[in-house]
Length: 458
Image (cartoon, rainbow, N blue to C red; front, side, top):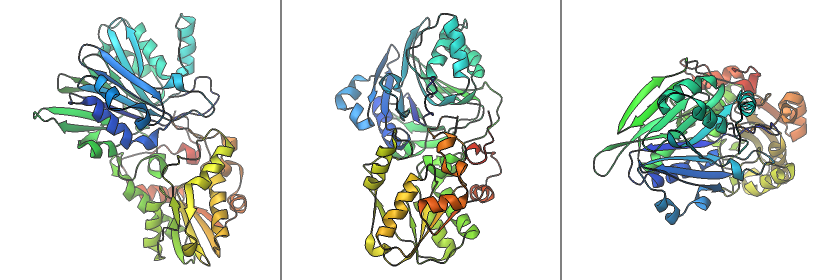
């Protein structure tokens, strides 16, 4: 979802939906916990007991928003949930999801991952017609479109309204008796379908942004939700409707950074892809060194691949404090710099007097890389060769990811040599676009790589 005031860039979030599952709120809770890396600003769950909807949402981590008493009050066998990333500089308490509304067909709750690129245009038109908006979320646009439609069922209203939306979106919508799951025509963001067997032997279903949620709750992965597809869950049955013309361009940055390595995204295990990226990086950019170390955690698999391909030993030369969040999407530069020092601690005995290859997944502003090089220099590293297991990030994302403006992207404004000098490394190299393609090795997909080549799909 995006800030319709356009003061800042967008969020990358997690969504989950469970249907006909006993203790649905608990399953949603643990699924959101498994996907906490996709959103740490706010969390929310809405449930249905087939008569009414219940909802709890607030700012904070999943474990901070929910407790046993709250989960017990979220009644019913159907649930949806959401983890939200912050919009930099915004007070987002009003923008936590699910979004809830009463309308002529009853009650509805919606969770959304992505960014509707024509949301402002639709919103302006709705305001002219008398609509009143309560938040900055583009998700609220869908609520108004649903309420305005004259179709007699929610299924038909969604078939009518969803094709009007452009951009990236994964919607999960809960009514009193049904659950609707919708993925945009380009399938930018990941969304998978799984199955759970209840204690009484009946089947229930789960949909989530990442399959790591399935592993935690004991669900079996069935398949990805297709591009342009709407799934309707009703009375233990699933109906599939293709409501938009399919043109899949999934986000390649899910493989680079966002997804957990133990998730299957777009049909492939993320760990395998990242390891292949490291192997391709070693083929393209060999260098003489003593050890290969990753920037934890998303650089680990690529560093293992680089080590395997090059024959240079792998070492955990930097240890991460897992109680500190990500850095490139923090609201202020001062907090970002402090969190780098809090997050990463080198092992001096491994680093001293060594020629080091440092593997990271990406360079965005360059702040983290510069500080990593500095702390390794302070530990006595002889040489530092920074290797990035993705191409240079030169363009912001408009499809549901919180990235800086183009003016803040260091590789969009400096040459490779200038970036290398800025971060203080002996050398700097990136994986090529061709190497990235070879790493994925899946001819069935065309990927959105606008952040790397500036070519926007929508």
